[in-house]
Length: 448
Image 1 (cartoon, rainbow, N blue to C red):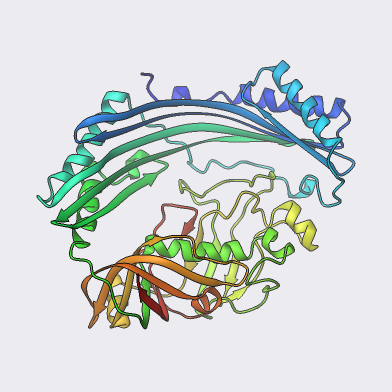
Image 2 (cartoon, rainbow, N blue to C red; image 1 turned 90 degrees about the horizontal axis):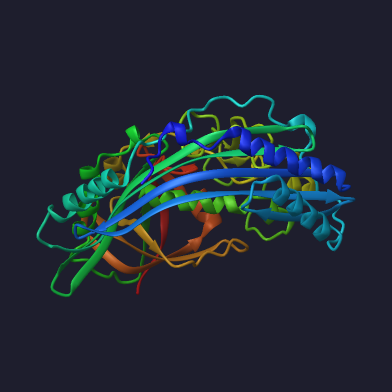
């Protein structure tokens, strides 16, 4: 099994040549504008279950996607072959497709003056020199730590290790040709615990671009064990109204619903509960949301978006008011606005405000529901209606009283977001949206 080391990072020249060939062929074929993105990645993933290797995969992926614009008509095609002949054939396919598509006045590249001019080194690539035997040993340590924590842990879906490294190059007919390498690594564990018929399942994971920033294997396993053991003896509650505290790993999803509602596509289609909300209060005035796409070594960092537009720190919500939408070049044109460098999504979007310790949040809530797991898809982004199956813990007197299961919480997203009572200091930084625990005003809580 090959080792994933810095010397195996995909070759920049190969990708740049493939993109350059694509743009050259598009110009010769009559395209007014064109763009292409090529990438190569390698990865190793291992899952060990009950000490035995359940899966071992080594991935090597490569490909290029090409989009051409001809008099407002758009055509796209892709191939896994980066050779010149295959790339040129793929461009011809894209040009052929464009002949059959309707003209769109809003289609095309982002403005040339918005293109990234320099690609800073954000420390996004940290290869892990890990071979299969080493990965298996680490996965065993993860699982063993969980299984050895308590006799009530009866089964496991395994301990897992994943490591990936790759490089992406983007270019377009504005003369842009840029790229950078990146990496991602993870450890995870899923375990089951039970007493008689009372069986539960839970997990934990750690992820980072730099393997040195991962939690150690034993910590991941023990954290998974602690979480599942805490759920033993879970009960149902009668229907009531009470405050709801979203644990940090679930709060990220709540912020994600706000982001989805202010995306350009939702705005120009008028399919959002926050349609036309720019300048309006969407959070309490003491809260804000800011993107930090150039943070060094963070999972959401990127020097440019999928349109080639340079990224920069940018306020989304300030003093609770929505300052802008989340726009690509296309959605910006549809709305008569300028791109916000969000083609491909938000990057290190952080909820900002005065935070409190998790213990203080429990005391402030007094009596209510702590949500640690969500099920189902009961969210309507057009109306804001919100209904999700949840599990977690009932809190009495500012302390966890017992686990709960098979519950449903319901409300309206607009009211939930404006009704945030407090946030924590325990920000979960494992994704592109970085949120701490969030305490909400009373919601409807119902048994299953």
